[in-house]
Amino acid sequence: MGNSILRKQLSQKNSRNSISNMIGQLKSMGPSNAVFNQMYNNNPQFRNFANSVRGKTPEEAFKQNGLDFDDFRSLKW
Image (tube, rainbow, N blue to C red):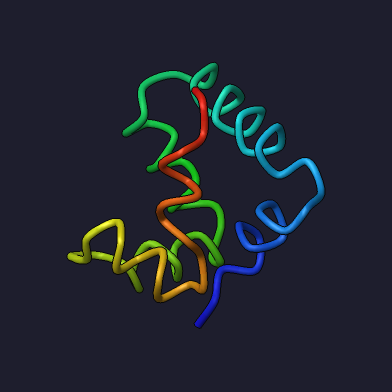
């Protein structure tokens, strides 16, 4: 099962800027656990994704969803 939202973000021409903007928006929403809880409770697609990667390492979660963790790790925050 792939995460179409994140895959679409990563496949865009300016994916590094898109991801940075997305992270900035999430940070502005408050504590990360509050953001996670809000997304988990209100977005079935996010809930399915979160459940599918629970207990996995970041590398395993990225690979499962067809993403390259090294590309993500190399982003400049």
